[in-house]
Amino acid sequence: MAEFSLERFTALLVEDNRYVANIMGALLRDLSVGNVILVRDGVEAIECLKDSADPNERSIDMIISDMVMSPIDGQILLKWVRQGRESPDRFLPFIMMSGAADSENVREARDQGANEFLAKPFSAESVAQRVLQIINQPRQFVATRDYFGPDRHRHSENESELETERRYADESDATIVYSSDKKVRPKDASEIYLFRLPNRLRELAGGLGFTESGELPVKFLEEADNLLDRKALDFHDWALEYLAKMSGLCTDAKQEGTTERLSSFKEINLLAHELRGQGGTFGYPLITHTGKSLYHFTSPPCPVDDDALEIIKAHIDTMRVVFRDKITGDGGDVGRALKTSLDQAIRQQGKSADQ
Image 1 (tube, rainbow, N blue to C red):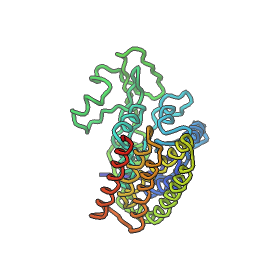
Image 2 (tube, one colour):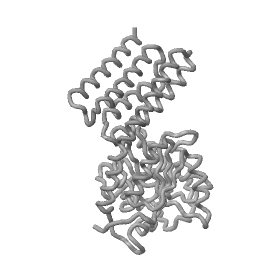
Image 3 (cartoon, helix red, strand yellow):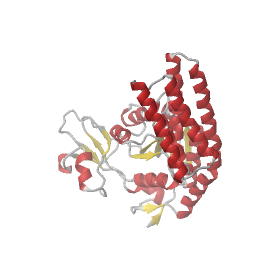
Image 4 (cartoon, rainbow, N blue to C red):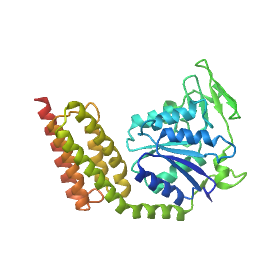
């Protein structure tokens, strides 16, 4: 298989966590992406995309965006790209990433028009795979009365998946469009348009007129893997800082009324979401597991009494033990004991709340 180079690519990276953004940006560069533009939320991303419409500015070739951000999150940004009047390119490849990679969030991202979904914790290989998907197997765009975006149909998928994911019964039902400049706004449920567009990204990666599938050189993946290994120590310090913030919020919440305590729990929920998303990337899947548990426990509607605070503290203590004892992988017997202890504390809190 031919080897690709992404030196001519410009990627817009949208991530509000500066630590994660720096790592993802460096990882993309190690995968040979020539230009990575980093912005911290959907507001900055929209301004950047508007600027890219200027012929004197470098065009953007793909977007990689976190889902959970404020004030404009990844879902709203994606909707603007696909439907906004000022969007410079409604067909721009969009990779959504999130630590909340459950089926509901994945489907929601696809329904808004995401090309691919990247789950956190990510690896060098998973990032490379998503980028190669939009180059080697781009989904053709479909426009219906209720949807505009990449078709769920991909030729390599099995037929049982196609019937539930495709937005039309057969290509003979659709009008084929060969230009991205053509504006179509179906008004009837029977109107379906399929866009057959040139694979511009493949030519960027492989050269003018290139039509084959390709892959990234092994050395690029090795360099990206080495980067994640080097950043593992930084993750340790970053995560402990987050745990200290959580502990401070718990201390404050002890003195707060219900309204203020809800605000503290919301902040803890966001911090847990970040930890959940990164633990596995750096060899700490128990941090991802515990962060996910804390994220769900503090998601609305959640209890805000003193018992709930104790459960939050139990999560924090569990994660501190993982870092203190450097418990990587699944942790073996120690890891199972930590999970069991935490699960028992959560169940006990649930029983207390019911009494």
